[in-house]
Image 1 (cartoon, rainbow, N blue to C red):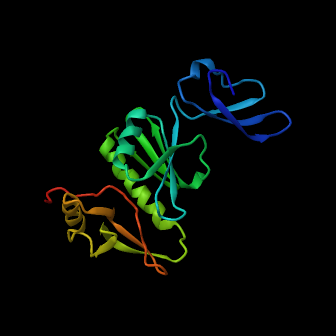
Image 2 (cartoon, rainbow, N blue to C red):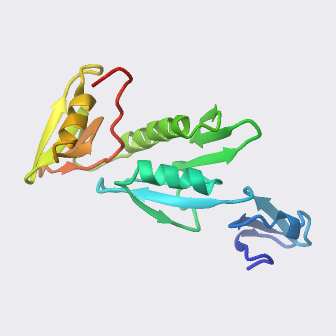
Image 3 (cartoon, rainbow, N blue to C red):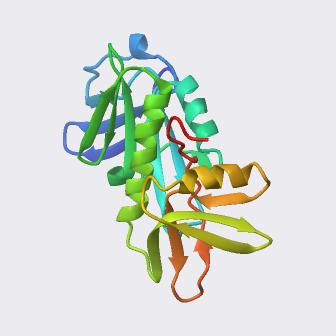
Length: 212
C-alpha cells in the first residue's frame, strides 16, 4: 500500500526495479513522484474504476475501465440487466474496454480498435454496445449456436424473432416489452443445441430514429 491510499501490485521484479501498476481511486498525483527510487510507476488517470460485466451466457465476461464516475453510472443504468461488479484487477487484458479522458473528448479502446468521440454519453454508449456484442460473438462456446435475431420470453417459454436487418425486430420487441413481455436479447439469439435452452444477453434495445 502506497502513500495516499493507492493500491499497488507488483507485476515484475528484477535486481534494481519493480514494475508497479498503481490503481488510483482519487487524485493523488500531487503526492506521488514519478521517479521514486526502485519504482517505475504507471499512472492510469486521476480516477480509475474497473468493473466486470457478466450474464447467463457461459464463460462470457468483459471488463470496463473508466475515469468518470458520472459516465460509469450512466453506463451501468443502460446495461442494468447485466451483472456488474467492481474489481481491483483486470484479469483478462484482451477483453477490456478502456475509456480514457482526453482534452476534447475521450478515446474508447477494445483489442485493436479505437474510437475517439466528443464527450457525448450516448455516443459512448453506442460504441460500448458494439464492443459488448463483438466480445460475445468472439467467444468459443461449447454446444451453443447463435442466430441474428431477438428473443422474448413469457411464462417460461422463449420465442425467437429471426429476420434480416431493418425489418422491425427491435421495434416489435420494444412494443412487447411495454406489455410485460421480457426481452432476453435484442440482436443475437444464443441457443444450447443439446438442451435447447436460450441464454440471455441483455443489451439495451436499440431503436432507429423515425420508428414507432
